[in-house]
Length: 282
Image (tube, rainbow, N blue to C red; front, side, top):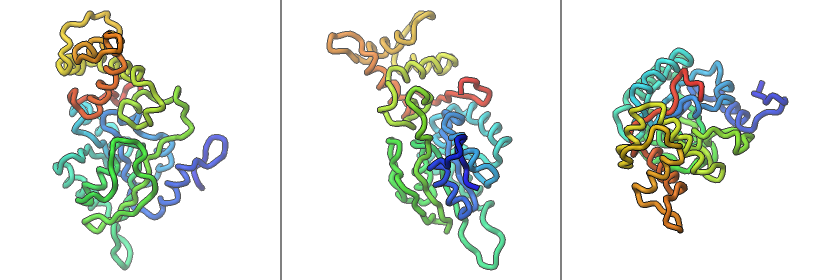
């Protein structure tokens, strides 16, 4: 039976994934290591229930090492095989390939390739993961959500076959219901959120850990900020530090917000994780 919505209708994305599930041996579910819970599509998670899968915390090079370790332990208890991964280098590739070797088909008269399917919401780095496995530019990558438009089968160097699918995110979410975290990691279209609102949310999360706040101060040379300063004042100080001005010569919070989000996404602020397994905000 295909997965259904609460109103009885089959979700388009669920139907798309469900159609291919029987053809693959293993599903690689890619999450963003900085927001593992928020970057997981819960409906997709339930669709995959009972299917053998490997959960990958991608972009681990941008995340807090300690928190990534805690997430790995938590997810291992929930789902089974887990892996922290960075597609920017080759260090994590041997462990990834070793895990895949353990999943290869062992039954049948004729040997066949291990068949994989990679899934995840937009911009968690699915295509970059595939390209690392293929050791070539097998699929187009980019920082814009939705680059992968249709399912495609990619033959990998070890003889494995991987089915790539478009990033899956519920189309039923209205802008006011979208998590600010999804906007912070660039998983939703910029048209769906306000930069300043999202940046203020990010600052509020960084305030919860002193070492993250210290990294923010160091990166932007903010100096001393009063303990009772508003979130808006943080953006104003960033704007002043970087010379980001409005037409009238004042500090531009909008430009500061855009800079902060850009710097966070590329890891310029330092390694940060915005939620932990027991986090009630997520």
